[in-house]
Every structure is written in structure tokens, then in C-alpha cells.
Image 1 (cartoon, rainbow, N blue to C red):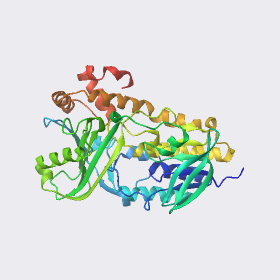
Image 2 (image 1 turned 90 degrees about the vertical axis):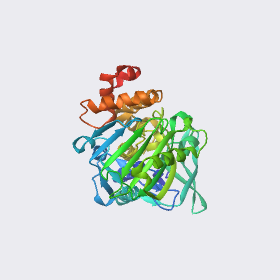
Image 3 (image 1 turned 120 degrees about the horizontal axis):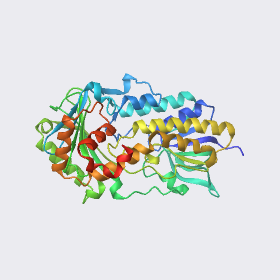
Image 4 (image 1 turned 30 degrees about the vertical axis):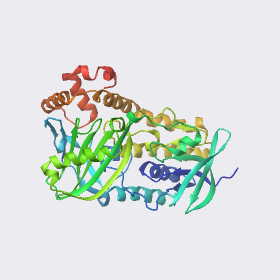
Length: 395
């Protein structure tokens, strides 16, 4: 049966665009739909990304979407102990701060150049199924209803994916696996213009405060608080405002932009493939549970998804079995790391401010040669083995 498209990608974030690009490169007929009128807006991201993640996904750096190169990173404990990593060591985890709206548009443009079709203001409202197989989506394009058939639908619509839920995959999350975030872009600051900063402890229960430079005296200043630690939604903004008032480097600043959103800090999904459907990016819950970062993981998963789907299009086979190589590729690349970091997150939730002070003080004197969660956990294991005992086999 002739379908409208081989592949329909729902969501034009980095993972969706990478999937569309690589599938189209292999000759697949690809449509990518985006419910908003502009790709990359509104911003819902602190905009940090590491260079190695871009390299793994084959994305060359384009200075047009780089806001700031990062010379280092600081991890600050509740009592003010600082673990500082300089330029030669920080690039593994935070290498640059993006202009995310430009980055997302650039990734979508690459998909278009590869042959993918893009529709804006087109919202999926349900999937079309024949038995247990997904065969397309119901959508509204600029208010008009339509039915689109495809060999495979790609759920690239965020961590609580509606597309996956409509297809029969449970994407609900408990409050302990969601971080509620609030961020300002601020100017007239007195922060270091080329250092990312992470402040942990009770100032941001279950999460952290971040300062990501955007050039000169401007930065993204934000906070993530675990949803289970909040009594009411607006409380996350109060936590951030309280910190800004107390920090003289920030209290002199003024906001240029404010945004709020949520991030999953859960283990990855148990199922990312079924007949006629795959999950990519945040939909597959491949956001790092410690850092909340998902751009690099989404790019890599999208590359694998697109390549596998391109092969499936050539074979005219979008069965679960035919698409399982994608599931294996992304799990081999990151699943152990995601589980380890989720278990570390769960452990760190139990630590007092005084224990976190001791940990950061330890790190400041340890020989940590690269700023990565893995290397930090290795250093903690050497000095405080009791803190990582439950998951030391994954370190």
C-alpha cells in the first residue's frame, strides 16, 4: 500500500531533525511536523552542550549558533566550597553555550537540505493504527484536520510523549523523576564571563542553580528543583529569586527573558520501538538524570534512528524487528550511563548540605582530570565509597 510518506517525524527539536536528515539522506520520503510557528522557540533550555557530543553525532560546530565558548566550570557546595575545572579539562561536559533557537533552525535546515519536508503550525492529535501497528497520524495544520499515513511515525515530541501514549506506550512520570525549571536571561551581571557554574544543595532541592555565560555581562541564570520537593508550582521561581537577591554578583543584574518548563530525570524508557513507531530524544527519556542535559544524546540517537529508518524504507519494512537495531545502538551508546546517573541522583537526594560540602571539598583536592559525571563519581568512590556503594559496579 502506498503511504503519504515513509516516515513522519513529530517534533522539530534536535533529535527529530537529526532523524529526518539521516533518513532522507538514504532516500526515504520524510515529513517533519512542528506544532509551533517557529522552530527553536520559545526557548526551553539552559543551552549548554559539550563538543564531544556534537562530534559523536557528526555535527560540525558553526559559529553562527555558538553564543560563548566555555573556559571552565565550577561546582559550588552549600557552604561555598568550589570545585573548579579549567579549560583543558572542562570541555568533556560543558564546552559551549548555544543560541538554541539558531541551533535548532540549523539542524532543521540540514534535514531540509537532505530532502525532508517540514510543516510548521501542524500539531499531531492522535496516531492512526491498524491493529497494533501505527500507520500514521491525525493532525491539525493551521487549524484544518488531516490524516497522514506513513510506514513509521517518529515520536520526537518530548519527555511525556503524547504520540507514544496514543500508540500504547506509557510515558507517565512520577514527581521524583521530573525537575521543574525556571530561568532568566540576565544582563549587567558580575559573574565570570566564560565559566559555567553549578550551585548544589538545599538552595535547589533535588537539583541545582546554574549560571551559563552568554557573553560579556549576560548569562542564563536558572534553577531546577525536583517536582516532588515543591509544594506549589510557583515555588521554583521563589527559590531562584531568593538566591539572586543574596548573590551580589547577580542582584545587580536585570532580566531580559524569563522561561519555565520541565525536564525528565528518569531512567530511559523500557520500550523505544514498536511496529510503525520509534521514540527518539526526550521521548525516549535519554536526558541525563544528573545534569538534565539532553542535546548531545538526542543528536546521537537521532542519527542512529535516521540511519536505521533509511534502511527500513529501502526494505519497505517498518516492523518492530526491523527497527530494533536502533534500540540496540542507542542503548549500547548510553543506557548504562543513564542508569548510573539516575542511581547517583537518587543517592544525592539523601545527602545533607554538610555532606555535600565534604564531597565538594574532597573533589577540590582530588585529581579529576576531566569534568564529567563519570570522573567525579570515580573521585567520590575513592574518598567516600559509602556514597556510591549501591551503583559502584556501573562506575
